[in-house]
Image (tube, rainbow, N blue to C red; front, side, top):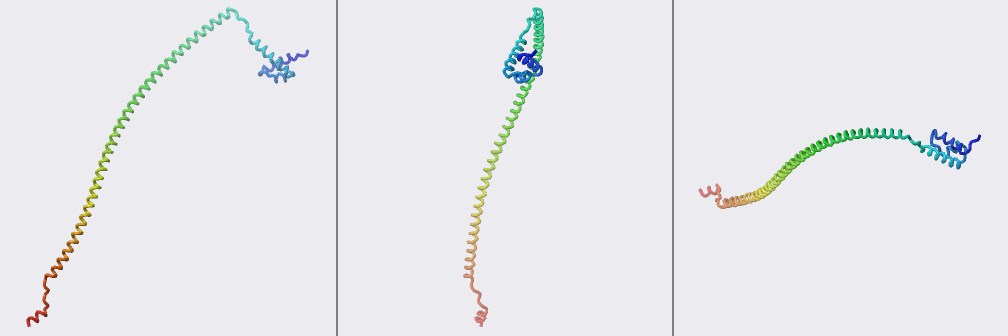
Length: 200
């Protein structure tokens, strides 16, 4: 007896679903039907499978009661385990919070210490800079005074040299004049022949 088109599509879909999800093209090729038949009957096959999977027989009251007890026991056990884990986690968190608080306190203390040391170092360096600036200003003033004194000494030395040169020139002039005057005042010495003639 030949199978109908629907039966062939259903059989092909069952066979293919054992390995993978059946599609229109795979069912059409396996069943040897048209594309329209494969599409229509594959849709029916899928709907029947879904309907069959959704049908659940009503459970007896004793089974439901046992299931409720089991669910309650599981819930109680889960709650106990959850509470224990929560308590342990909270204890760990509290210890970590305490440790972190201590670490933060130590860091703040270290920061305060470093800040104090930095402020002291800055104050010391500022004082040194101020002292050096004052010393530099004093040395600059002294240098200016030394330069002014050197200039004055150079000017005075130049003036003295000029006066000495002038004095030497005047002295030389006076000496020349003195020598000239002496030459005019001292009588000439008589010639020896003149003295012999006078004696004869």
